[in-house]
Image (tube, rainbow over all chains, first blue to last red; front, side, top):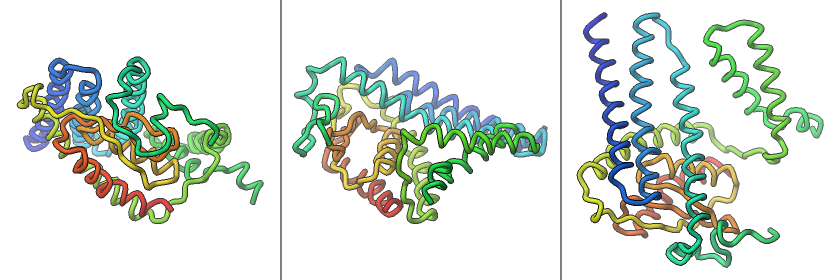
Length: 121
Length: 165
């Protein structure tokens, strides 16, 4: 394999690996659920992205075709990551209802939907 | 028109589903095209109850610019969060909730904004106000709530306002 391709693939794998490692380390280091939520939703997007880029370059070199599966994986990941994060955050709010007083105000007549369900409209 | 709307509630979604199906089967064949088109027709009809209205996209050029900008932001902010995790002691992180007043009205635009905020590192959107006009956002490290909110409004919401009517 050409040196330049090997180098490119290696760089992407290393970058991806570093970000996944940092994301996992964040899970260990950060103290509470909400701040821990930041580590996996973030660092992993680039971590997995790096691995997928490496895979794309590898298959481009070997088969001389562009594989779109990696692009699709990225897309699906970006569609699902915010939804999962939102579910976890929402569950956290539901489980800690005493937190209500620590949240900022909505600056609206109605409160946050977890605590103040929409009535009617 | 109503018949058309009934059988093809989201034409773009139908095309997107067909294309996705073809992309998933990396080799093109007529059978896959037929099956993909069938899925593209059936799925929007089955899910139309959950998504009654069509989004009003004003300019697709702005959509492309927005996607590229967010992709760039994700990379930059990933590095920022990695730095925070590695080098900042936990006691010095300014973790806080902020409330972002929404000017966007359409549910699609609000969903996109919430998704963007979650994907860009350092912020997770967690709740919406009962009347749908404020977002509750958790910031990993925000010195000043005002500045963080203004940044998100200027960078993302203003652009989404140009995309959706």
